[in-house]
Length: 128
Ligand SMILES: [Zn+2]
Image (tube, rainbow, N blue to C red):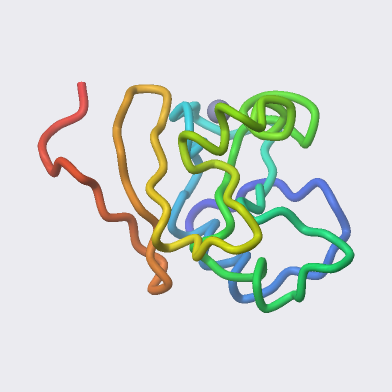
């Protein structure tokens, strides 16, 4: 792997974590910020919770690399702006299937994350 995003927690790194980091590389998936030497973390769209089975959140399509932490940057934004985050796919409901919920980044690009660890854009043209 060429790029590794700094990890901020000591939680076990899973295959899904690694696949998400490989997919998103050294950029924030939401704002596109270059994360080399920057604070970054993995956000779980279906939020981790005591009652949420691991199999429901430890999925590559449920994990996105975002700038900041749970309180700063895009990761902090997702946790502190739940309504807008849910409307743009960064937070999904416990009953949702993450692969079925499209996300919208800060440039307005709409895409979905697949269980295969790829990104499918609604519009395949250039993003300026
Ligand atoms: Zn960001």
